[in-house]
Length: 256
Figure 1 (cartoon, rainbow, N blue to C red):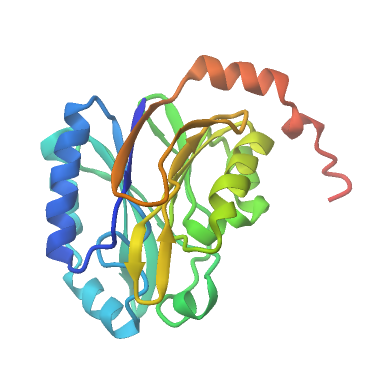
Figure 2 (tube, helix red, strand yellow):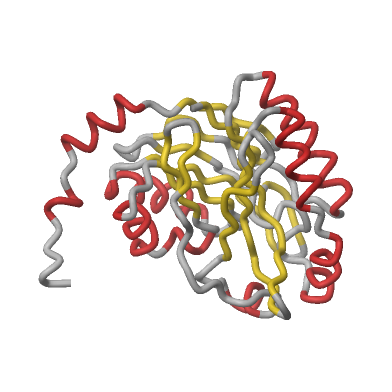
């Protein structure tokens, strides 16, 4: 599987976001990618306030996102708002290349006032979805800073953990320290896809990456500009690492 990791500036409208998504899906498909991953809340913007989130969720056009996947023959993991009854969630939608929604994940660990003033807390970790022979789990931004999340997804069978994010300075070490650690301690791939540029007071730090099961960078963006990273997953690398790194089998679950 080839991933396309879309490091971008925050979008200022749903219309612009959908246009950009279609352009990027076309480009990624032309470059052989099987799955395109966007940053957190890509369709609406992240730190935009409760009223703007309310307006954005009323404009949500998930069918258009599915059409983009189908038209370009590429799977998408796209961040955006999701309403269930009266609750609005910070969501990531995993859509396969045929345009079917395979999972909708709601962020379970809300970050500070910015999340809590805009969203309801998700109540379940992501499903594990198999695409192109790979078992995928999803976390959103702050979720990955809790080691229990990635460990639980790995125990459930995830081989790749996809993390749309909106991480800002001065928390660059989440990108450079914690994300590689999550990959290494679980023996899985972790893809972390961030914004650059400013949104309200936030100065996003970029540094999007794919870390392999040893914790090494397969690819990493810098912290300044928009770019889409391309990287291939390898079953032989995954198998070899999991044979060598035995944290899962060595756990003392009788103690914790």
